[in-house]
Image 1 (tube, one colour):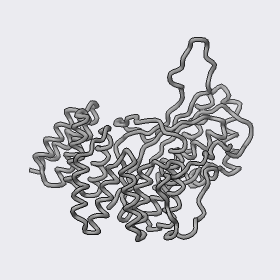
Image 2 (image 1 turned 120 degrees about the vertical axis):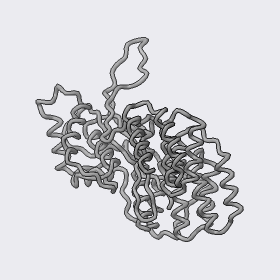
Image 3 (image 1 turned 60 degrees about the vertical axis):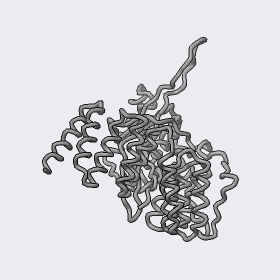
Length: 392
């Protein structure tokens, strides 16, 4: 099974206030971005472009939904509450009965159905923040991975949270603001979450199209997946996840040559190569090009990714695919870069357990417990050690 990235967006909001329902401004329509100059995506295999939501469609709410929010926001009894807090409170009130659903919805559908995945909630939050004149930002968070299997595709969730900024204030001479204040809202917080980076609005929007493309791949609708990935790559042409997915789409649609061209381009030009290399190896093995596949193994072994999280995520992917020995090698690389990350040892423990290596599993669980900095993790690993000992 191949692993596809599925964006898991978690949400928040900040306001300044506005009068009456309004449609989204043109700020959500990004400037045109060009695809890689020497990598073209021919549409011959995939038919005519289907009806794909535009950026403004994603955030559009019905008039009734807009009126309901505006009535709450403009209520006289709430005017002493800061604008961003009012958006937060409204979201909290309307999402109390939200049910998690794996599909990615635009704002109107998410609110109407009271369900959707965490990206759906983030989109809804952004739509409300726009109505209130609130500026938003987005942060990529590293957290315990969330896996979902649909057919022969494994989805791994990316965790992104929204920051709702307080209105900018005037500064006095000589004053420098290092970080602008705001609210971070995360409806599924984890004690293991780590801030990775801020992401642009274009990257956040591309996640919507990537999500829909992943869902299309899972139902073998490669035509729709192709056109959705084209939209994602217009927004973020250097997105290794979208490039990887596009190669998978071409391979499954029967054009292995184009898939190989895309893999090789990504491997040559993009900084994050692990998933691209692994999926390229799948293609080579399917064509019985074993010597070249072995070269990929060597390249993976020699690859020097700067971030331990690249290897940690590669380990999670390999584990989800059932490649337990490879998962161990990836987790070990994460340990070599950052020996203090308890998640790497925990991952190795799981993989060793699946291989029947109980002694090695115990050793790595002890390491995970040693390097865990929260009592909750220490207790979790202790429970696993007790469970492992009871098997004897």
